[in-house]
Every structure is written in structure tokens, then in C-alpha cells.
Image (cartoon, rainbow, N blue to C red; front, side, top):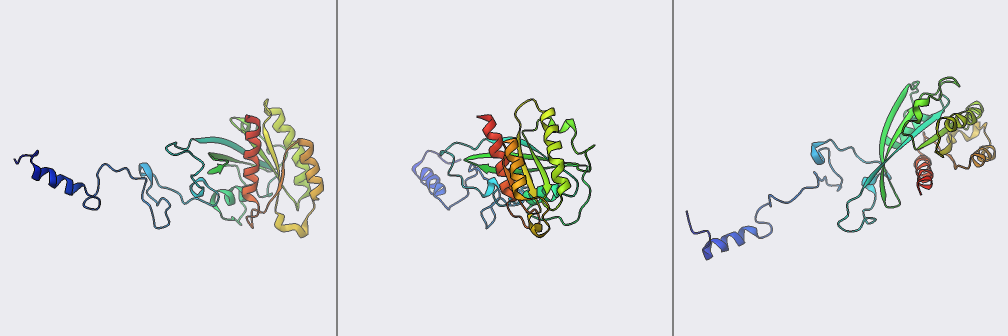
Length: 240
């Protein structure tokens, strides 16, 4: 064995440490980075990384966090309520997966997850897509467990679905002791020619509840993200 402290050995070690001579085995990897700069399919901890949608935390600037400070992800649960066929599932799928699902299948209950970056903070939405058939099963008390906010959805082309909204609002208030956040949502704005619910009437109802009203189109992806940003804003108001 040679003398590891000799000038020749030290010179050899210095040469080996020069950048580009060999990979540093102690350098941490942030995941497999594809040519786009986003994490590829095999991300951290060996988990499969899903491609982020527009507005997701992975596409958001990181300049909101001070250098050396890791983002702290907060979780919030949102329950989506409304009559059957108003487009609740289509709204959730469009927001989470950036696609429109044209085939209607009655929902028993589905759950979705998506990250949202809002005012320098990363949040994880757990979105419960509740069943919506009639007044008897459209709201279940267990929907209130751990829920921070509700989206009460109707179709602008179905006045009966709008008439059901106050019933749902009363159910929400009966099952939640705290001042839980609510946003009234008029879906299917792409069917403006078949409108049965005037904008002014929907806005008056939302004002009587003290909550925002947002019209959107799950089909055309118009103002879909605005719906969830609005509900997140309402949640944070109540946490101040």
C-alpha cells in the first residue's frame, strides 16, 4: 500500500475532485429530471410522479419561499354537492386531470386529490365528489367529517337543480357547528343559450349566504380553477 499522505497521493486526490472528472456519490438528487425540467415518472422515494396540471404547485414559482426554507404543504378537504347530472364529477375531473369526461355515470362517491399553490403556500386538496340524485340522498352527515368547505353546484340550464341549492345549504349548516366555507357554483356556462337560472338570481342567493358565486364550464374548462381558488380563499378567511 502506498503512502496516502505523500504529495503525489494528495495531488492525485485533488485531480479526482475536480469538477467533471467523476460523479460525486454524495450529491443529493432531486429526482429524475426530464428535458422539460419537471420530475419524470420515477420521482422521489421511488414513487410514480404524476404530471402536474396548470396551476398546480409543480408549475408554480418557488420564489415565494425564503432561501433554504422548505415548503410546508397543508391539507384541506372540500365536499362537492349538487343534484345529479349538474356536472360535479366533470368539474372535479377537469380540475384534477385537465380533461372533460363526456360519459355520464351516476356517482356513488369519489375522491380526488390535487395540489394548489396559493399566496406563497402549497395546499393539497382532497375533493369528495358526493352522490347527487334527489333530496333524500344528496347529502349525508358523514360528508361533514373533516370537511373545510363545500361547493354547492347547480346547472344554469336546470332550474330545479338551483332550487335544490338552499336545501343543501341548510343541510350543511345543520351538520357543521363552525362557520364552514361555502361557494355557490353555476356549472355548464357553455349552455348559455339554454339558461334557466338568471345570473342575478344566483348572485342574490350567494349574497344572502355571504359567499362567492362562480359560473364555470367543466366542458370548456372555463373558470374551473377559479372555483377552487375561491373556495380556498373562503377557507383561509375563516382561519385568520
